[in-house]
Length: 262
Ligand code: IPD
Ligand code: CA
Ligand code: CA
Image 1 (cartoon, rainbow, N blue to C red):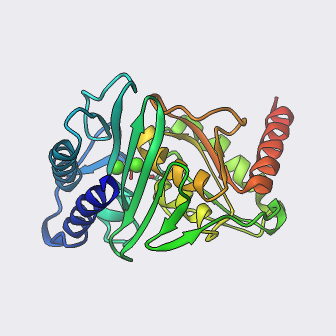
Image 2 (cartoon, rainbow, N blue to C red):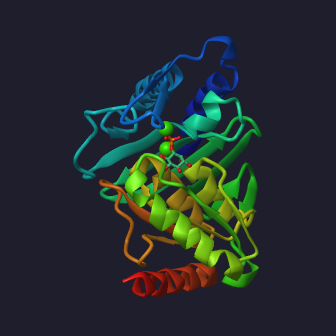
Image 3 (tube, rainbow, N blue to C red):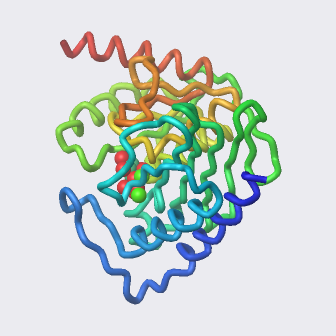
């Protein structure tokens, strides 16, 4: 019931995002020139807040385009990214998603990530498996060597660029190939759907990964920070997402990479 109602809202938001008129997309920067926000990120978030509030009036919100986000995860809380992959969106690249997680007392109980360009809804409810549209998904246990590795560049944190690119260069001979697709939420869902086998980014925020984290766990995958610690749903952290094997091998590789660098 809740799932159907939230699905209707996320798909409506998706139609809005997909049908934007690119002759006038207004952008402004937030923290630095890379951190774009269009009027559509803000409008989509306002739409999601209003509609989700009708479904669960007692829920709090954490959203990317909101400086008054909740500081606690007690009770119900929606964690939302109205457009994950804003740079892709601003350039009409057709690889962005709307991400909604419903958290209850600190635990994600429902996650939805919708790519309107492909009409693909990745979703999971706690304990009920993971799906893309109506199709169940579960991860294969590939080792690192046979894994397609996705990564994110942490574009709003230039101080992490050297580590990101040194690590990517260093690990490249040990994986099948590498992708950087521009939407962390889809990146993690793509691990869940075996479209890539492991993903990392040196810093992400809860709205980037909250919904996708449940989708991946329900698909039998693993998501932690890059040292194997629990993900943080309030403050953001680094992310490693994989199947059991690729995840464990990546974490070992990263630890030894860090030791080698001192
Ligand atoms: C960004 C995307 C990108 C990732 C960044 C995120 P946004 O989200 O997920 O792939 O590399 O770290 O911040 O800003 O497009 O919602
Ligand atoms: Ca995002
Ligand atoms: Ca966003």
